Image (cartoon, rainbow over all chains, first blue to last red; front, side, top):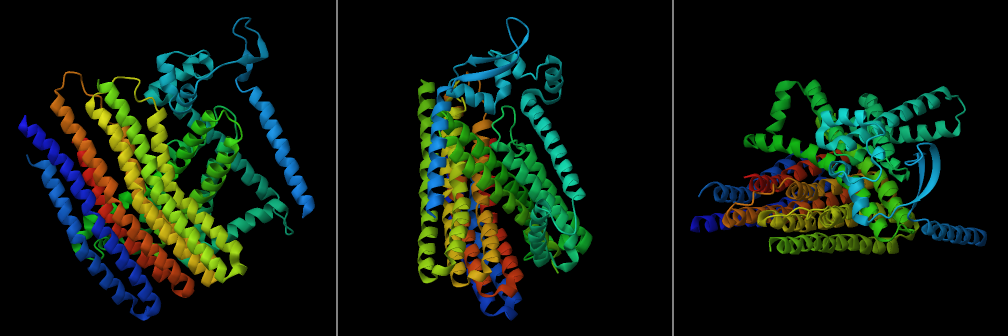
Length: 79
Length: 303
Length: 247
C-alpha cells in the first residue's frame, strides 16, 4: 500500500518537474532569438555568424530542459 | 453625415423590432413534410419545448441521441430512410450522422465552387466586370506575397495557395446560414487535419525534389547532429499545430455560439457572435493557415 | 459520494480554465492597446492602419482564451455526469480545466508582446504595414502552438479517459488521479516559457522588418529557427503529459 502512495506521489512530481522545468529554457531561448534578430538588423553581413552563435547558445540553455525531462522520465518509469 | 446617422438609427430600430417579434415565436417550428397522424403532405406550426442541454446534444453528439432512442421525430435524424442510416452506421459506427452531414456538405460545397469557377471563367473579357475585378485583385494580392517569399521562378505555386485560402474561407463562412443540418466542413476534425497533412506533405515533397534525398536528411541535423529526433518531432508538431489551430477556432466558435445563444434565448446575441467568430475569425484563420503553409515552403525551397 | 466529488471537480475545472486563461489574455491585449495608443499619439495620420493591425493582433491573442472557454463549455454542457464516474475520471475533469487554463498563459503574454511591438513598429514606418502585419500574424501563430498543445491534452483528458470498473481498489484510482494531475501541471506550466519566448522573438522581428525591409527573408528565417528550438521544450512537456495520461 505504501508503494501505491509513493507511485502516486512520483507521478505527480514528474508532472510538476517537467512543467516548471520548461519555464527557464523557453524564456531564455526566446530572448536570445529576439536579440539575434536585432543584431542581424544592425549588421546583416554577419548574419551567418550571428545565427550560429544563437543556435549554440540555445543548445546550451536547452540542457537544463533536458535534465528536467530525464528526471521526469525516471520518475515515471522506475518504481 | 447627418443623413448617414439617421439611416443607421433607423436600421438599428427596425432590427430590434424584428428580433422582438421573432422572440415570441421562439419555440414554434415550421414542420414541412408528412404529417404524423394523417399521413398527408402538409405545412404546420408545431410548438416544441427544448431544453438547452438537449439542443446542445443534438448539435454536437447526434449519434448518442439516436442510440438512446428518445426522439420525437426519428426521420429527421436518419435522413428519412433507415437503410441509408444503416449503411453509414456499418461504415462509421458511432459517428454516422456527423460523417454523413460532412459528406453531404463537402459534396455541395465542391459543386458550388466548381460552378462558380466556370461562371467567372466564361465571363472574362478585356474590360473587366465587377466579379472579375474582385477575383483578380485577390489573386494578385496572393501572387505578390508568393513572389516575395518564394522568388519569381516559383510563381506557379500561387494557384495552390489561392485554392487553399478560398476553400478554407468558404468552408468557414458557411456557418452563417441558419438552415438546420448545415454545418461548416471545418467543424469536423477530419477536414483541418487532412488539410494540415496535405500542406506539410507538399513541403516535404518539394524539399526532396529540390535538394535531393541526402541533403534533405542532412537538413534535419542542421545545428548539431543529435537534433535529428527533435527536428523530426518538430515536423509532426507542425501538422498538429496548424490543423488544431483551425479546428479549435472554428469548432470552438460554433460551440460558444450555440451555448450562449441558448442561454440568452436567441435574442440579438447570435448576430454579434456570428459576426465575430464566423466572419472575422474565419477570415483571419484561413489567412494564417495559408501564410504558414507558404512560410514552411519558403524555408525549404527559398533561393 | 464519488458523484458529489465529481461535481465539485467538474465545476472547479471549468472555472479554472476560463478564469486563469483570461488573466493573461486581458494582459496581452491591454499591452497591445496601450502601446498602440502611444504610437497613434506620435503619428496620428496612420491611425486607421494601426487600429486595424491592433484589432487583428488582439483577435489572435484572444484565440488562446477562446480555447479555454470552449473547454469550460464542454465541461459544463457536455453531459459528462450522465453516467456514474469514479475517482480518477472525476479528477480528470479538474486536470483538463487546469491544463487549458494555465497552458494559455504563456502564449497570451507572448502574443501580446508581439502585437504591441508590431503596432509600435507600424507607427514608426507606416508604409511597411503589410509585411509587418503578416510577420506578426505568423509569429503569434507560432506562439499559440503551445496553447494548442494544451488544448490537445485537455481534449484527451476529457474524452479518452476510461471509466474504470467498479471493483478496482481505491488506491489504483488515486494513482491514476495523481497521474492526470501531473499531466495537467506538466503542460500547464510547460508552455509559459516557450509561449513568451517566441512572442519576444516575433516582436523583435517585426520591429526589424519595419526598419530594414530588404532583409526580410533573413529575419523570418532566424525567427523560425529560434522558434523551432524554443518549441522543443514545449514538446518535451507534451511528451511527458502523454506518457502520464496513457501509462
